[in-house]
Image (cartoon, rainbow, N blue to C red; front, side):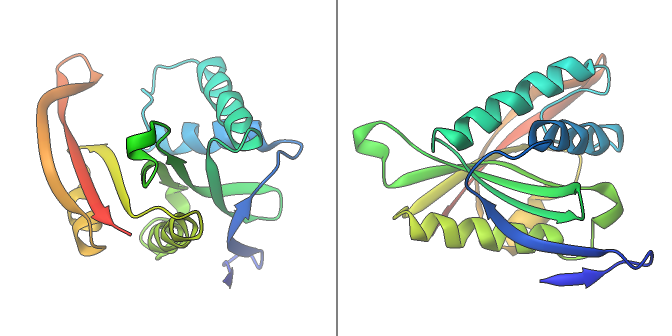
Length: 180
């Protein structure tokens, strides 16, 4: 899909990324930084230094290159604006299952349907590689439960206070599953 923004620049995707390209790790780190600064749940704290995000992004790029992770993106020209990351389980008894490791959309594009498009593209990729079941973990406090439930995911459990966003701000970790 392509959608023209108010500035006349097209947002395109979702696209599957099979190999690294210049700026991919920086784009991932920048996306995580913008989402985190807006209060989003991508696994980082607003106080995390940029080099921590950059190291995590470089590790994800290595996983994509080694085919241990599948990366689905949306973007605008040279800007990475959303990702879905799928990992297939590696234990022999679990290879029919996978994990939605990340789903993130730039704050400027949220609530415009891009998260659902990324989620749908991840499901297509999961089917393409033969997965039958997926799981994900998110945190409370963002109303993500309704988003995932509306898209076919089932809440399987909560761990109260397992995520510490900041001192005095503990959130529940929430586990979801769905059949592919």
